[in-house]
Image (cartoon, rainbow, N blue to C red; front, side, top):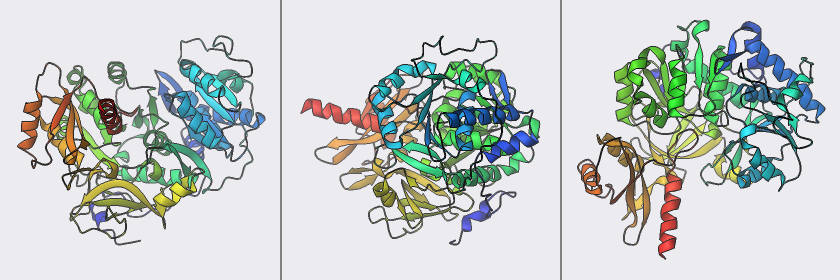
Length: 556
């Protein structure tokens, strides 16, 4: 491995290299159930499931799935939100050596059809709120086994649903009834190699076409080990009974997979499961929780929480021990606001293709606002020429990030051409453009595909976004390049103002021109009530760009 000067900035208790157990992923649950059997693995609206209960339920469901014909290497789709049923099904599939296919519950029928056509799952687990989309899917693909649950089935005080009460089609199975019909809790006699695929995660990658990143058991074990070791400086001071994780990041997203599920399993921490992020509802949930040890989140979520009217009365510094920000850049102004509250934070970077990890700021060491930090343990990152993808760029110059590590994916499912484009000699082209400083800290300037080329200048939207966020009237903002006959592209900003504030286009542009070179400042500003976001709260430039292109087509 190349010289890694950034390791001198690792926290005291963080090693510079690790050995990773070559074990199946479900063994993390086995260990937690053995050492902390009665501790709550999850808390779902006050209803608790212990690690032992979770393990036994997953084994019973594994045998039920085996009776349905699910075998090693088969794919099983989980079309579920964060709930106990997801965890039970997840580990049941892994116990069989089958492959979990994570599916966003908000997928439309065409998106579900793409998923099913690519991975050919034998079974799909779904829930009562999105059955029409599954019905639409089955009208277009070969029949597959459907298992249905109601989201309230694992909340104490609610009556458990049934196949009859949900009006399920003939042949469809009910989750609880399927589980009740299986009593076998022996481990399935399946030999699972650490390099076997464990999960297929869908990602747009650099092309925007959903692809299935294949992540092995080893990828997950490595990422869980590193994630835990990175937080050891604070975790070692946290007694077992106080270890907890706020699991509001969706499990069908790689961030939720690693920083919620695997982190919790590795550290025997209780997950507070939240199936969706509705701000007012979430603040009510948060108010009822005494303490959150680890809170994986995204900038828009953090911004909404700390600025909520009820936040001052909740004394968030007592309640939240560590905010981790990912899935998008955290504005410096927001970092300062979190620090002013007395809450620890860390910002990092990762991808689906890197099993969520890549780089992060130390938890207790040198943190640089605006930086994604330094490469994680056993991770190598280099910056190469954006055009050629070959030569490393000088320090301080922007280059595309390439990463090589134990948690880089095996490739894309049934897509050797795209795998070859993205993976070369173990190095993954990330599509992110960054600069490195003298300490090895990385600063992402933008996605390669988001770079604006205006009048021959390369412009990085993140720099503009940071300035927009500094405006005292701005709540949210994002910038992008839109077609321009003269300059090729020009910069347009989309802005959401804070409640009760008023501003016009001239004011925003003038503010930016005072802080940016003239060619970088927005030439147009559009005010909106809200900005398009992904299910994890990431601002979606692509949606705005598509809308702008549609406007041009309508004018043509």
